Figure (tube, one colour):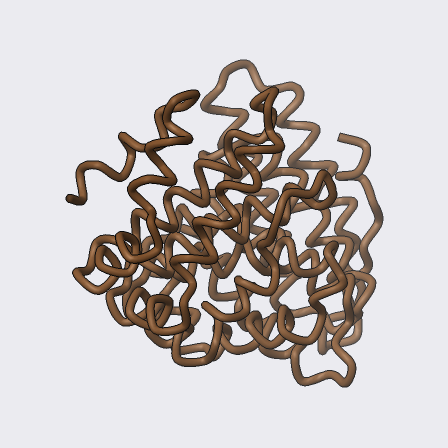
Length: 296
């Protein structure tokens, strides 16, 4: 709770100061002294309401960073319930507007972009309309361009990919992102076995699997020969991961192949690439073959 006592000063248009510490101390104090879970939730909701108000109206960059850090900590500790609260209080729209404003700076504030995407990735799955909101707001291309321009900056693109994964659950967004080269972009991130940046690899595969559920994107992947590439990547990870420490990555590759083979062209490309034999051979020590068998 110590971080909740960070003093954030916010100047209103009528030229007087509100100290966020006073608001948070009131809510946190009541939170700690509350006699039951209902009271805890009520006072914490009050704190979030005030913090979101300040986040929406403040113009001081450091204040924004501090507030975002507080919200990330609250959501990380509280799980889904606290994320739901932020969504119901209009948090998604506020964050998307901040993202739009931040993107107009040249160059964008990296720390701000990291925090914004980290928080969006946490609350996004709780907002069923985030895909539509992001598309209307123009946030899709903002996040996509950040990834394109910062492929070597893993600290920045990791939360960006997590947000793209959330956006891609919307079919219209998946098609739109595909037209803007996001499928090709994912294949610049995923690759052969490496112990470095495995978290980034896992998120990129999850994002790609979501994108490939779109038939348009699946056809694009087939046309560019990515089915063979996915099989090659899977075999390489399977060969090197003898202790099964990277099962989630191997599963992620299989999910991508499964998404592609949902279309007829994908199944043909899979067979032409000798995929049946490859997965049969690897299934001697794993059950990867069974995951795809249902498509045939």
